[in-house]
Amino acid sequence: MTVFLALVLLAVILGLIGAVVKGLGYLLAIGIVVFVLALALLFTRSRRR
Image (cartoon, rainbow, N blue to C red; front, side):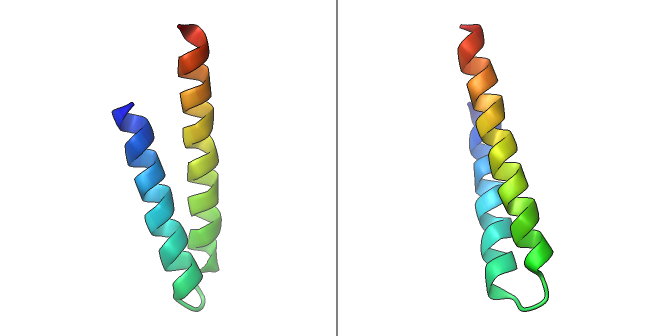
């Protein structure tokens, strides 16, 4: 669960920086990808139990 929360926090930070700073839109895209990966990680871990 700690890894999931760390990935979500990283995704939010990258997304905010990418949305606010002009020319760093790729950080927003990376933030979205990290968020999707975090959700996939959470889903796969919860299905194992």
